[in-house]
Image (cartoon, rainbow, N blue to C red; front, top):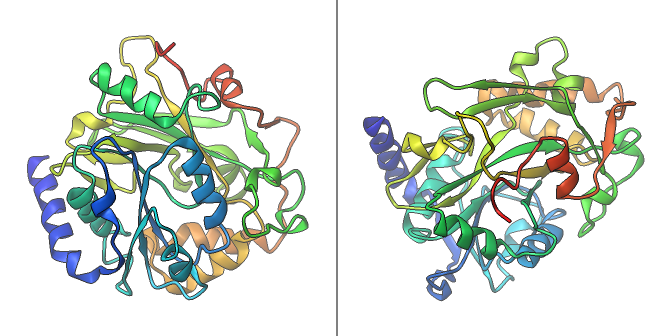
Length: 328
């Protein structure tokens, strides 16, 4: 595992030359600031709400990598004073699906900071997030000696076909996609990295009903007190050192955990899926996007009689999808 981690760190150092600084405001980062890291491509329509959401949670500075967008993403981000932005036209797949780039920026700028690593369609929810800023959570994690914080990705969807409610720039996506699956999840333990492996939910039910083992993983560890020796090895599903993946209790009880509300299943999915399928820059020859394109032709409806309408984080805790643990 040490060798794997060293290889990851060497890879990120070798790939650092692919990143071209557009705007580097990292000199303004203060020692206690909470950071956010994201790799994006053609996400201009999502970014106004995304930034607003995380600013309200208490994120102090954003580290973005733009992978050759052509929809105004780079220009929009470069106009934000709390954003540092890098650009690259290098291959996403060849950079270990963007991990080489993000691991380098995390190593360089996030050392000793709490940092959230999320996609632009992922929205972090944690216990008491409606009344306490993210700094309250990270201070408590510091006090209890916890270095990483686990979440489950929850696919959100509308009541009808996704094409029926077009998403507008800057809109809260959960005004449209306010439903989720309260059950239908499978959990196993990954023997290699020790992380939990969760599958199921709306995408597994609709897009991978014949091949559920190929459904996307829903386990994520997005919030980490970063150290320059750390490295993500599989999206944000797993890290090294291996102990960072221990975000669950093995002897009964519950560790505090959160959720990522996933706003992927809105009307922008069709165009995005076709673009990514043509680029062929994703895992397993973009098999996930192939499934999206094929199934979306029949205008599927994700809602069913077991769907739950999202209310707040307490609802997710009651359903067992996250836990406040012993944080009171």
